Image (tube, rainbow, N blue to C red; front, top):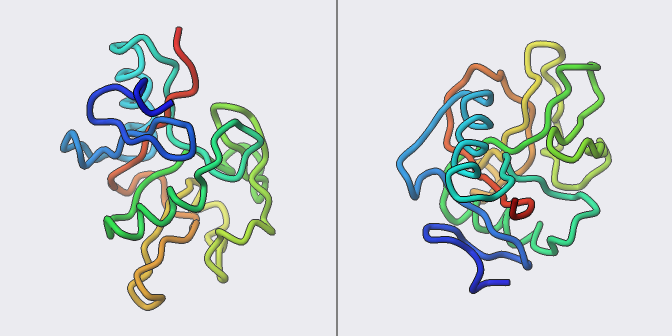
Length: 151
C-alpha cells in the first residue's frame, strides 16, 4: 500500500515504483537492471526494472504509462527478447510480454536482433504518449524500478 513505499518511490495501482530521474541516474538496459537490484538490496526489497501487463497484483499499468508520458522521458522497462528473437520475456518474473499487447507502438517491435531491450518510448509525433518499443540495449536512458517484494 501507499504508506509502505520508501522515500522517492511512487505508489501506482498498489505497487511501488522508482523513476530514476528522482535519483539522477541513467544507464544502458543492463546498468539500469543492476541499479534497480542494488537499490533493492540497500532497502531490503526485491527490485528490478518495472513490468507492465503481467499477472501481478499491480493494477496501475495504464497509470504508469500515463505518468511516463507526463514526465516526457523515455525509460527502460524489464523485458527483453535477447534469448529467443521475437519472444519478449519479463526478466524478473519470466512472464511473456504478448506482441498483441496494445501498449506496443504500432510499428514495434521492429528491430530484429539489433533491438532486444524494452523501452517505454514517448513519441512526440503521437501526442507525447508513451508506448512500448524495442531498442538497442546499449543506449542510455532513464529507467523505472519496481519493488516486487520485501526480503
